Image 1 (cartoon, rainbow, N blue to C red):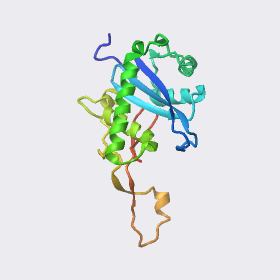
Image 2: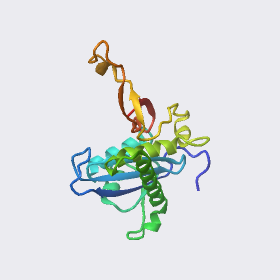
Image 3: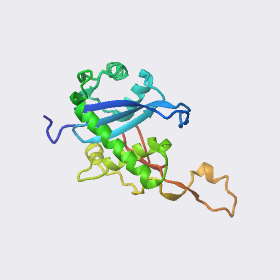
Image 4: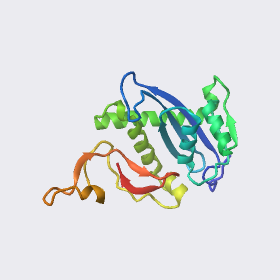
Length: 212
């Protein structure tokens, strides 16, 4: 039982899965990679990470991107070796579900299904194919975290994200960084056309004002 004023990372649930798309090459130049879904019970904060493999090194990196500078007080997941090893490396108390019984990790599995449904909707609405699923997942989680009063984002960081709400995959004109802007000719447009893919978040999930 968790009270309404429970702090971030009192209880975190996690699940992971492997994606494989045959010969299709993703941004990591590897047709298979790990997807991890994190959920904080206290704030309802949801976060996902994609990594090239299930190695402990990449899993610890994903854990740190979720937690930021916060100390996780309790971590619950299935018995995946990389999750147990990474929790031990970070000193997180680690409860585990019963092997072969996914219902004993029901909260994490429901969050995974929620994100998978969100990915599917974002890809269909944007017209992008499944090779863009990483971006769709991160954009969906950020949208989930910034909805409601208070939103999970506000519950975690104490402020709202103060971001522009843009549909995933929408055509947008981006203002380039100053370094890129110097490459433009004097009469060229100062923006570049592209598609919107999401929001840049620092470790811990805080939005820094940059868009993809």
